[in-house]
Length: 361
Image: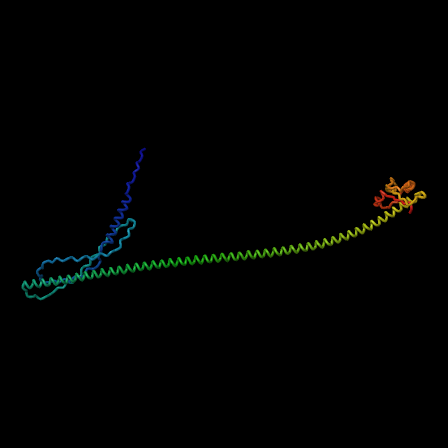
């Protein structure tokens, strides 16, 4: 398979094509706007017709009038090349010259002499040249006046255009400045409004927080006061209850002590009564020895069983007289059963009984 050769484009073809198109456009623009296409109507001409022509004078070389200056037009702005057909300049139809033909019907004059004819023709030629020169000078003066007026008009229009542009520029600058000032004023007002709204919002928020704080403090104060009041009431009630309880307990304690004292007194009285009975029974069973000096005393520890029976008798303190000690010991043994109170709770008071007997009573 044959490989196709890659043909690289020649460098500079595209810029050359663009340059050629631009040159053609500039040339067409010069043809359109550079040539002065006159559309003015030609002036009328006066033609004298003679019945007999004079001899032709020698031709006088005249300087051709200078062409009128072309108006200076602004250079056309060169735009990117566009493929548009170039219109052909249309040549306006030349108007037919208005030739006023005046025929002079003069009577035949008598023929003059050649010298007079020559002088007359020279004079007429000079007069004609003078008139033509004056006419040419007048036309040139009018052309210069027209050009001056056109130049002055163009300068006036250019000045007015520049002034208008300056006024338009100043107006636009003024409008931009006013718009900028209005924008800045609006921005300032917006910022002031936003700042005012922010401060107002902060103030309302601060007032709300302050109100909430005061309400919270008031509620907390009321709660504390209520709790303090309830605490004081509870403390008062507890204190009163404690005082009442203390008084009740004290009263109960007093009642108990009084009852115990009464019971103790009653029990002591009963114990003493039964001890006295036991001692009396023992004394009734003693055979006293005679003629003992003084009032000797003997003590015995007696272990008593429930029911009044005697378990054991021990001498604690002797009287110093064996006969008296033996007599008392025998009396204790003979006194069984000992008289005991009917309440079993009092038996412990009589379990270990101490018996003290005096010789003289």
